[in-house]
Length: 449
Image (cartoon, rainbow, N blue to C red; front, side, top):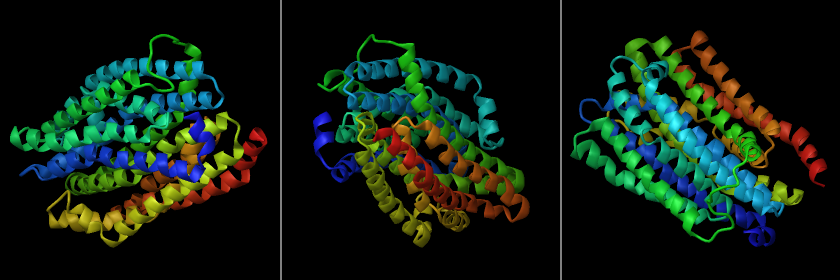
């Protein structure tokens, strides 16, 4: 790993690490997309079942935030330590991360099951949606350990430069999910609950592969026992807390959107618009997950070269990660504006829902090219442990979105609430670029040169 990072050019490494990680997230998307495709086409309850998954999604994503908090925090610390030549600290990072994920999994499972009714109604569930949301949520929560451990520890595969194997871990789970979904949903006639069972089994498959790889393969660092340290745990959390907080904010944004739609749309229009929002969020998974996959796969470049004190290669990493993210999100921007109905029809056969969602999707995605800026700079700084720089520029964009969602339906038609994302993405990216080049880059140069 160290030899390759020191000798291979940054553009080659970005594409070598970023593209497999991006492709891995395409397969990871199947966890959500396939569930929604099959569920949305359940005869009789398809639209309500789709809305139920949309209601559950923020809570389930919030739970996975723990995996990224520990996984990204631990993997970044390991990469920084390896860049400095400190293998003992790198080993501490992986051991303590594994222990934390086990403890967190147990605590989160118990808490989510205990408060599930309150959680689902807080997220915008109605009496009609609750039985379906409850079935999906309960089963999914029982697989929390597999989800957190598989996702969290996979970061250590990526951090050691094994992007292909990191991708394969996700592919295994995604393929299993595609196979099992129709069996449980239609074959066993289990509906939305069957979709959750299929997903949990798929997550177990991913977890088994990840643990086997990290235990049995000869790597720079493997999962081990011992070297547990409160100081190391604090360092992991201090880096990973950024990913955790941002994920929570992202979920709050989805919750707020649903709550505002419910508040200003009422029971009938509210359910209809929430179903549209669920489909839009499915498209946004295509935007966010592979985009974050690129920065996650390349995160070890930022961490390693920052640890090694190589300012030039850190700046090159920012440049080429931005280019790769920009190419990907530029393609999605074109597709979302030119053929939104093609995507929406995957989830719904209802003509009214298709027309509404297509119109709303075009509005929502107008500014997604700006997301490339956020991912490249925010995630790059996070991988370097520079939370004091990363958090404010990310937080600005989130707050702007929240303000738009809160204000737009008060002064305009409810459907204009779907412009909130475009406004925050465009303005947020301009703010990020200004702050980075005017303030953050000079600070990094002074520190590293």
